[in-house]
Amino acid sequence: MPNNNKRRAVLDDGCCPELVRGAQFDGFLEIPMIERPNALVVPDAIVPFSMRDKAPTNNRIAIGFYEMDPRFSDVLISPESFIDDFARFTAIISPDCSLYRDAPLAVQITNLYRNRAIGNFYQRKGLYVIPQIRWGGRETYTTSLFSEKIAFLGAAKHSIVAIGTYGCIQHHSDKEHFKAGLEAMIDTLEPEIVLVYGSMPDSVFRDYLHATRFVQYSDWTTTQHGGDN
Image (cartoon, rainbow, N blue to C red):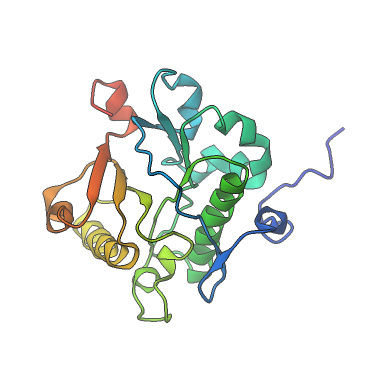
């Protein structure tokens, strides 16, 4: 018989409020905070969640979520089930929930909240968590609508963050938005280290190479076909 008490979706009981019990919150939206770690650790490789069992065991591995949301839906629904699994790895990058520019703003804010809430939860469970920074529409990385740049709430300043370009800079308009969001992120968070999953084209990154330390990782597919990570 099915367990009728099993949560079927992350929204069933208000985005799992028990996850943020004891958390610190940031900004007027009260986004859960992923705190700056005592030491900034740069992974040797970033491995997608669905490929974590294929990760090399002799390297410092970070588990990332640079894949379609359904592939890591179990983490969004029951993050507590993965604590021991993730503890095997050097770091966890907070879930890269989709922030499509054309999605309703409420959805973008909800996915930002889930990113930080789950990252905060794992950090309070003793895991090394690197916040994944993702911006959506212009309203998320400027103050055109809100008094704060909401895409960057819940991430500490002068710390280590991760971003992903894989699949996000294919068209001219995508590159324009990505570059604008990148500039806003650097100005707002002033990160010491930025991990980049995917390519780093000069047209997007050249103007900001002096502002922080970028560490680039090839995507999993490229890595498996002989690329670097």
